[in-house]
Image (cartoon, rainbow, N blue to C red):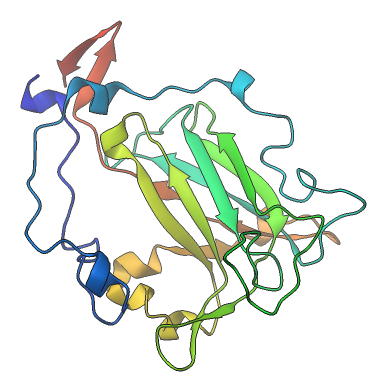
Length: 241
C-alpha cells in the first residue's frame, strides 16, 4: 500500500469532537485518550460491493414497503440527491440506508416509549443503490419531532438517519438529514456539537419544488459528500492518480 491509494484524511475541524458536554451522552461515550490515525488497509479502500439483485423492489419506498392494510399516516415526501466524493466525483452503486421515526415522532423500536402511537403501516427504514451518476431517491412520510432527555425540555427536529457505505469501509458515513425551515434546528443539542456552522447547515435538505409531484407530495434535495479518494481502480490493483 502507498499513500496514493488511501482516502483523504478527515477534516477534524468540520466533524464534531467526541467529547461535547452540550450533548450529555457524549460524556460517557467519548474515548478518554486520543485516537490513533492508521494507514488504510487494502480491505478498507476496496469494499464492500453491492448488487441490485440484493435489494427488493420496494426497498426505497417507505410508503409501501411495510404497508399492511393501507398507507402510513403523514405527509408523503420525496428525498433525493447525489452521493459524491470530496473531489466531486459520483460514488456509483453504493448502498444508502435510511431509518426514521414515523409522522408522530416514534420509532418502531421496543425501547421507544414515546406517547405517539405506532403506525401499523410504517416500518421506518429503507435502502437503495446509487446509479452511475451517484443519484439516489426514496419515498417516505415526513418524520415528527420528539422529546429526549438531554435537558428538561429538549426536542429533536424532524430528521432522517443515513448510512452511506461509499466505495470502501474507510469512506463510510453515518449522519442525519434535517428539513429546511424546521424551527427546532437552532435548538438541537446534537447539531450544536458541530463546530463549523456551515457544516451543520449542509445537513439540512432544501425544499425542491421542481422535484415535487403536483397535488401529491413535496420533495427535498440532500446531496452527500464523502471523503475524497486518491485511488484509481484498474482490475484488481490500486494505482495512484
